Image 1 (cartoon, rainbow, N blue to C red):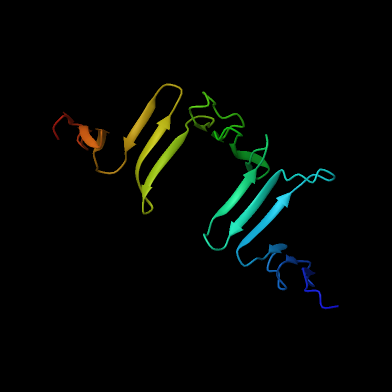
Image 2 (spheres, one colour):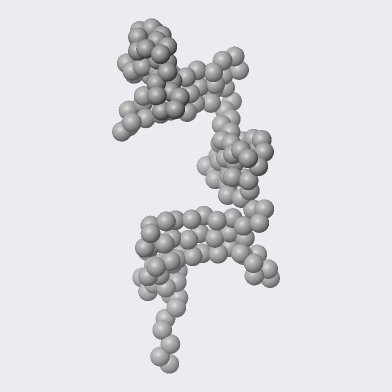
Length: 167
């Protein structure tokens, strides 16, 4: 009939839309922008979409209205981005202070930890417990405090403190 093929299900059950050779269970092909919309039956209003722009390299996961992305590992929620843009890791209720602030809430059973790495080498960390908060330079490097892009205080690897001057 001359109509170009729009969809294919190959012999292994992979579905291709916009491609005649699907490489995964669902492959969506386009020369510029591929979009998958997730809708509820009878609604016809997209609640979420996944898009990949082949020109810019940008990949978007977009939740609309009051929907928000949640990420799961082994059946348990690991991370959530709420409709205000606050991020919760280890919690389904990230802190929400006001419309003027965005927060990252890191919740752990005992010690939430943020590692800082340079080319795969751990250089620092932030650790919280029920009794203290630690800021840690883990290698033989100083811990520096800056204001207005200028160093104002330094604690060197020996524990010497310099304020206004380097110890």
